[in-house]
Image 1 (cartoon, rainbow over the protein chains, first blue to last red):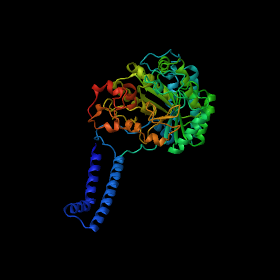
Image 2 (cartoon, chains in turn cyan, brown):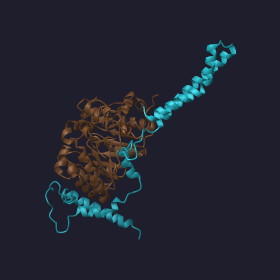
Image 3 (cartoon, rainbow over the protein chains, first blue to last red):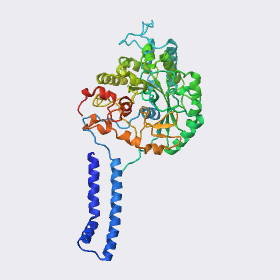
Length: 162
Length: 346
């Protein structure tokens, strides 16, 4: 049981106690001295009302426990975001404000073209070396990627305000 | 008092068990050592009828199509047509082998909201080895370029294993060069066939932490969006300094849960778990959300986490992986179990 659960249960217990106080008094009277018939009627009424109130509070308590947040870590501790789902985060990517990735072509141009003077396409790069995607991709795919970049750049230029 | 789990707006649909790759890290539940109950795959009419009922019942707005390999279903275009006609968002997870320009055109590059394809290495041999099929790298990268040429939103998926972690910086450069919209960094999460390769593939916490830090830096330099999908226990990997990467915990049973419909119409808490909550051919989604099996799944916590201030939110990592590898939901996530001695006190 966490702190919130304990507080919920404690508070609901106190409220039940306060609200059903007349019932306990009546029960006490009943135990000490036989109540007259009208008194027994009132007792029955209070019994039903008290039981109803107890059930209601139990419901409120359980409901509020469900909605309360779990224990929070101290501010300097890591806080994993609960209920994160990558499919959702990618959906946000699509539905959110359109990012400017396609216009960010400088990096792509640098990566898709070998540095000046390095015209030869080396074989598979050795581990740890980072000669660039131009030597990892199949030549056909590389050409397509360059064409796609050129198309994206042309589109970006055409969308620029005059 | 027991409450049913909340409604969700998103569902993963495994269209088929068939796949033309044989990934070392594959988590498909029908590849688990413990047998997953067999069953006939729903035909087009059966699937759409079931989906229609579930979409209406739950108010779903987003469907993720997965498998197996969804492109092996000849009726995939019909399924996508049906989903789009109802205004549902569609994400398609595919290995890309069968994605050529004509198929992309038929499916509609922009009608599928997000395409998720693997980008596991820049070394052709390593990507192909992890995929279990020669030619996988060339096919996946070409499909990515074809999709971008058609104007699609494409995310690469990098499964972080001990084998390919050294290539992560180059993979990020390649993702940028290909014009991908995001790269997902999913730590290897054993299940299915992947559980057989735990020793080979599972990276150490230090290796993962270094890779995340490197990815964070490069992400800023390259302007490449990153996403993560597999929980990383914060007691093993400190992610507090990372600003461009968001980490989450198990969503099962919550309002952002990704319930998974198997090819036979049975519902599970997520795509990694073999627990069947309900057979939606004859039961309702609400029955699954109120099931004892789901309550048990949600409540499970490894004893290892007793006393941890983050136990309720972190939940000890991936319970489905614990379920598959250790046979119990409240066993520690295999990553946590392997490196329990390295835990930080939180």
